[in-house]
Length: 362
Image (cartoon, rainbow, N blue to C red; front, side, top):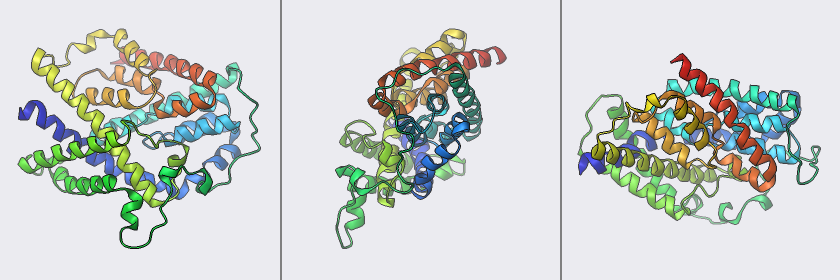
């Protein structure tokens, strides 16, 4: 029972969730501090649009790609720039890989940057762009800085409270409690991860408790990263950074726990250890690219988790990371559905090409 169920649940929180939290906080603060300058950067370097757009997705998460597709909907960037961002983004699966394999993640980021920019320039050169719903107005764009108060959804507005409980109320009880648990988890997980001590019962108890708390936060948030949109891509306050960061950690932890549990049961029941998957060859690459067609980050997080436990070869993961669009495809579907549908198909082409090339080289 311990190794089959409790250990995977604990590892999801202590080996992934904790390290995701350590990365979410500084990146969230950076978006809060400098995120308002993104539109100005894109407009100023329109000729370098695909390269700039791909570079904006290098930080973990979906924020950069969401800002690019929103800029495309306003006409501030070309369609090639939007496709470049969708190719280059690794979405929330970045957190999973970065926590466990930082050097591999950096190498994948460089590959995604080059592939995204090249694909974007090719799309613009070929003149590929579907008919728009309406003509955009490129001259009209929001001023740099945090979003105007009127643009902030009611659920994200800062409460007008005074007193000691104002900050806690602004962040939310569940995210605040999750951050406290993550802090305690980091104090135990870091020595274990760097092999300074062996996992003990406290590691197991705190890890399972952390995953349980993340699950509660996940379902209280509607079972999805409900506030991952153009507002939270450029948060207007530190409490928004912490609240959204808590939801993001919970989201990633739950899906990693699902992947770890699935793999644990599969290997226990069938004896399958993943060594059979590399023989799938081009089929595996095609599967990775096609799964990338699914919008959102959930299945992509599961894919990354399966890779980390030996469930698939690297070319399959590469094909999936290039093909997936993360949460950025969802606002594009709402704004320009023809552009979104064509873009998600276009991203599978470099995914299959690069994944196949890597298969031949390994």
